[in-house]
Amino acid sequence: MSGPHYPAARAFAPRLERLFAAGAAPSPPGSPPAPPGPDAGAIEALIDAAFWASLQREEGYPPEISLAFLPPERAVRPLMLATPLPLAPRTLARLAPAVVRPGIHLGVARDGGRLVVWGTTRAVPRLCFVLEVVRPGLLVVKHPLREDSAKFRNVAVFDGELAKLLSWEAVDTGHHPAPLGALLAAESAGPSGEAGHVLLRLAVSMRAHRRGGTLLVVPGGTEGWRESIEPPLPYPVDPPFTELADLAAELPEAASPGQHAALDRVVDAVAGLTAVDGATVITDRHELLAFGVKIGRADGRPRVERVVLSEPVEGGGAEAVAPLQLGGTRHISAAQFAQDQPDAVAMVASQDGRFTVFAWSPRDGMVHAHRVEALLF
Image (cartoon, rainbow, N blue to C red; front, side, top):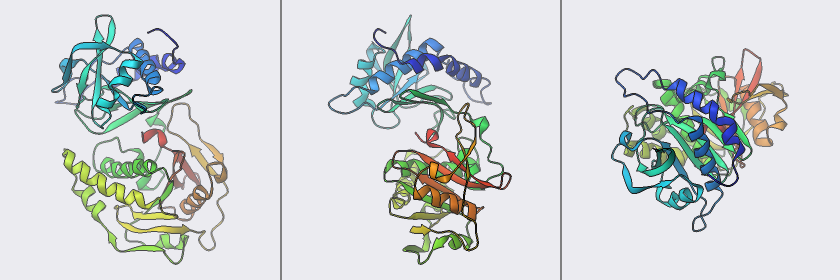
C-alpha cells in the first residue's frame, strides 16, 4: 500500500497477532476450530486501510464498515464477488454503503501474496478477527464470543493517535456490588453474563442518544435508595415497569434476531429516559422505578472527596482523583450516590461519549470510578 501509514497500526499489530494466536486454542468441546488469525502484517494492513477509509466520505457520509478476516470457505452462505478487490481505503469507502447495517461484514482474506476483499458475510465464527470502523478515526478490534454469536468481545480501540488494548484480567469486581460485576463480565456465558449483557445494552443505548444521562441500579425490594434522592420524585413509575425485566428473564441463550430486537426496543425506551434532566432508577432485576430524580447527599453522610479511577486497558493503573476531575455535577452526584448507597451502582454517560460506572469498594473504603466506554463500541 502506497501513501502515508497509520503509525498505531504498525505499533500494535504484533501484540494483536499474539493475542489472537493465544486465544485460538483450544476450542470448546464440540466447536469447530477457530479460523486462522491474521499475522502482524495482515493486521497492520487491515487497520491502516480501515483508518484512512474512515476519513473519507462516500456521497457525503463517513464510512461505517465491519471487516472480518475470514477465508470465504469458512463463511456461511457468503455473498462472493466474481473478482475480489484489493484491500485499499478507497475500496472500503466505496463499499461502505452496502454494509452499513449491523451484522454485515466485508470478508477479507489472502489471495496469494495480497489481501483482498472477497465479498460479504453475515455470520463469523468464534475468535474471528473483526475490525469495525465506528466513526472517522475510531476503530475497534473485536471477535465473537461463540460460534456465529451476536455477542462480541472488544479487544482493542484505536482513536486517532490513541490506541488501547483491553485487559480483562485487570478487572477486579469481586469487592463491588453485583451489578458492576455482571456488567464488566458480560462477555462470559451463563446467567451473570446475560444479566450484565442487559446492562451493557442499556449503556450502549445511553451513549447513543448523546445527551448524557445517569442510570442508578439499586437492589430490588428495598427503599434505602430514596435516602439519597431529593423529594418529591418528579416522575415516579407506579407500578414499576417490568417489561425489560420480563424480556431479559425470558431471553434464551440461542435467541432469535426477533427476540433480540424486541429486547433492544425496550432497552432504548428505558435508556431514552436518562436523557431527561435527573437520574433514572432501575432495580438490579431491571424494573423501572422512576426517572428525572435529583440526587442529594443522604443525611449525616460525608461529602465524597476522592474516588479511585481505573480503566480496563493494558497498562492502565488506578489513581485517586477528585470527582470534579471526572466531569461536572452529574459525575459528582453519581459518586456521592455510590458512596451513600454501597449496594447500588451509578452509570453515567457524558455528552462527549465517555462512560463511567461508580461503585463502592468496601475493600478500599472508597468509591471506584470505572471508565468503560472502550467496552461499548
